Length: 311
Length: 181
Image (cartoon, rainbow over all chains, first blue to last red; front, top):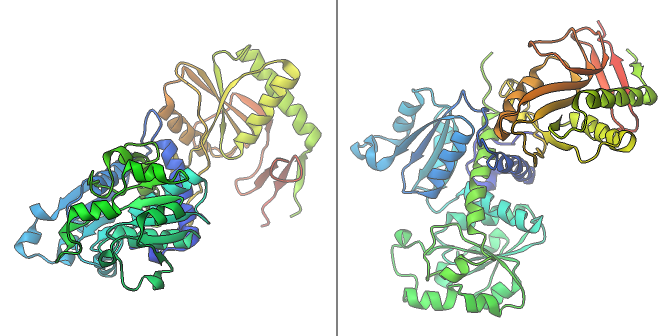
């Protein structure tokens, strides 16, 4: 298999297992590319990509932009705060205006679930979902699972616990889809109020005790508490949350095995993870960031290969 | 049409020995030389030549690498299916060295053009030569010529020259498959 089964990356849910393997194998090659003296390849020199961010982002936006530039694509950036969206323009009008400038691919982050899917049905361009509300964040899951694969050699059979604010996390949902498709076992851990009600339908288990969850797993993905998405109080206090679900060095060292610690960023040091853990050898947080560029290069390259040059 | 055998395993072995000797003539102890096999199939020729140089001619520890040119090809988005990339292994410095690109078949020259661009990512070599096991000399699309040739084959544009290496098939052989008109 040398091409993806999809024309857009809207979510991990829509990918097949073979798609995930192809993305990872391609990312292996791009990881080598970004470690060369000259970290750029000319592959996408005739393509233009628009990064549309209707929601704040630092690392995802930078990572996409760097991936696009490493592939030699022309890049235009758009953020909602400085745009005509504020003047009442609709999403389709905004995107169609951008596409009229001969843009081939759109990377979009949007606060509403399903925005990327909606766009893919209404505009004539390849769409990459860079996060849509609390729904999916496919490239983050791809880089998380790629980092797990890199650390362990394979994903199948590995035990992964996702800790924290699962309810508001698009990273968690995309991770669950990717890990399950590749044969990993997944548990969710966090306060009951921050766990989804219908978790059984996702094929995952729940563990409310953090120490037990960590004792069970090979790798723990520590999520941030997303205060900005909370319309009410989901736990009594940050201090209590940290006491019950924060990962500190004493807890990590008390386990009878060495686990791998992931975090999708941005980190709230001292809340879901302590500084000592974030900076420890068991944390692969900076590897995730590096892998993010390689994964996004792979996704863009594979999707771009389906945009044929007219004869 | 039934494939016509152009070279058998023994003939291939003789040609590889000659190519190894020609490289020694020019590069002597290989101290300023880096051999680069072009992925995927040039890597087999590279491994064979390194093996012969070490086993029969006492030249060991030759700096070498394997270069994939997929992301530098000029037919991206022009073929039905994208080309699958292969691993690049370039744990060697090429700065101011004499590079010898090694491939199994030189046809249009487009892969070599891609390799000439790809190698720039690793530094600035002093010079670059080209060794090809088979040279289909009348099929070139670009002004690229080899410095070392195992065998020249004169074939029509649509003929197929199939080089089999026992690393991936059960034999070492070169076949010419004529187009059925």
